[in-house]
Amino acid sequence: MCNLEEYTVCEADSEEWGRYHAIYRLSNFNEWMPLSFQGEIDRYKKVDFCYWVIKDNKRIGGAFIKPNMLKCVFVIPPFNNKRILIEKLSLYVDSISDRNEDIEVSDADLKSIKDYESFGYKLKIINKLMVCATNTFDVDWEEEYKVINPKIEHSEDMAQLYYETYSKSNFSYISSQSYDFQVSSVNVYFDHIRCMNVPNDWSTLIYHTPTKKLIAACIVGLVNGLPYILDFVVHPKFQRKGLATKMMKRILNLAAGNYPAIRLNVTVGNDAEIFYNELGFISLAENIQMKKLPL
Image 1 (tube, helix red, strand yellow):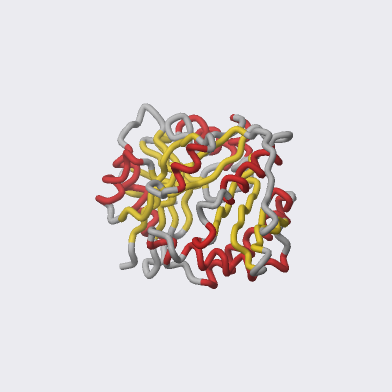
Image 2 (cartoon, one colour):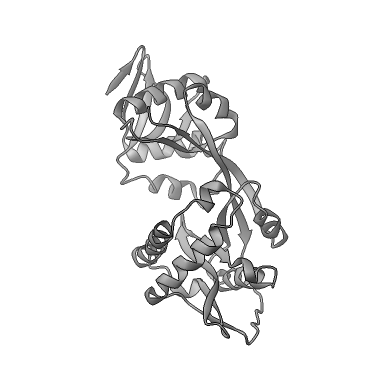
């Protein structure tokens, strides 16, 4: 336990914490559109970094806390001073973190930006989840393209495609990602589908037959009970040829028999927002990534 004047931060039972989180955070900040109330609680049964904030022997809020990480902050009525809650949590996280490294807040809400800034955090990016109902589509491919499902032997081609495409991004946090980062990202995908038993035929790789070069990828996982697009990439030289639309329609069609919707995350201001809107995606809550730089 850590005492902060009349406030205390202490570990919580994860299942009970999940119930409060589902009520007091998701009712105001629906970033994931959980499929069921109980399912949202069950997500946290085995989590060991749930915490309460206590004042006068009463719970006034909660959060996920690890060294160098703070997220899922929520207030429990009748307490309503979120700025104070963020201050106490920030002080606590400072006390357990390596101050030679950044401290990350990955899911602040828009209303709290100034509060975090007043305690040393800086805005990194604004993301939002988007969701689209699955539907049936007929998708035809031109002969110059070879469409396959990703296998481990495609890892190097996938990393190279990611690196060549993301390096052209208008967002510096994306364009600065190294080739090694992309290799790691590909490895995470294959680990994910193995652990979660995700069918690899949900994902699409498109090779340009004349050059035998991988030019596009739609990489799909399973998050919170729904298909989730992890990476959606078309090489700059092959954009605006309809490949993105066809890849998206393919996964919407494949998932239609078993899932009501698919989800993805997009950076606010990305041109892809318009594309996703045209395909029927709707935006959920925006969340903010913030960081406190090392001392």
